[in-house]
Amino acid sequence: MSVYHTLQALNIELPPVGTPAAAYLPFVQTGNLVMLSGHIAKRGGQPWVGQLGLNLNTAEGQAAARAVAIDLLGTLHAACVAAGTDLNGVRRIVKVMGLVNSTDSYTEQHLVTNGCSQLLAEVFGPTVGAHARSAFGVAQLPLGACVEIEMIAELAPKP
Image (cartoon, rainbow, N blue to C red; front, side, top):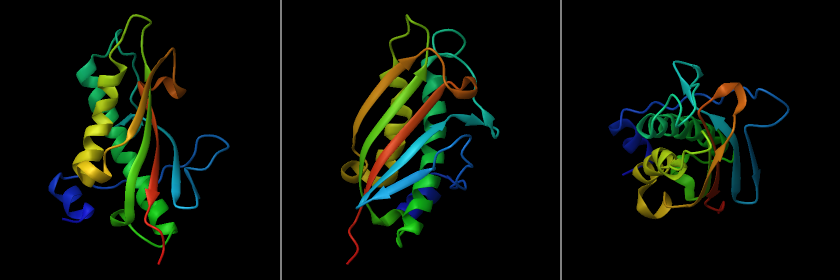
């Protein structure tokens, strides 16, 4: 099944690439690797504000991480188009790094980041979607967002 059929079955519409909030690019390709800049969690088009362990629980954090994954997929789609392919040309999700705005006693950052990782595995399948990952707790994120995630993907080489 194509990635786009899977997205349709999951009722996911890819968002357009967001405008960077500072001096950076949404993605950069070098060779067959595409590095996606960090995307913050948004709800209703606004930053999803909160701190895990204070006013958000793990399930809410997972939902925020899933929302970030959808935004990352929109940016990855744009990167693929710029490279002359589409999401079906993704050979591998290589790495995901999750930053979780959390209290100093909160220890479930890895479970929050699963919201992103699980969606990527659903969309791309267990081989292409499986990836290396880091998850960190941080004292604060831009605009007070609860989660920020960046990603590296590998595209199939051009023939």
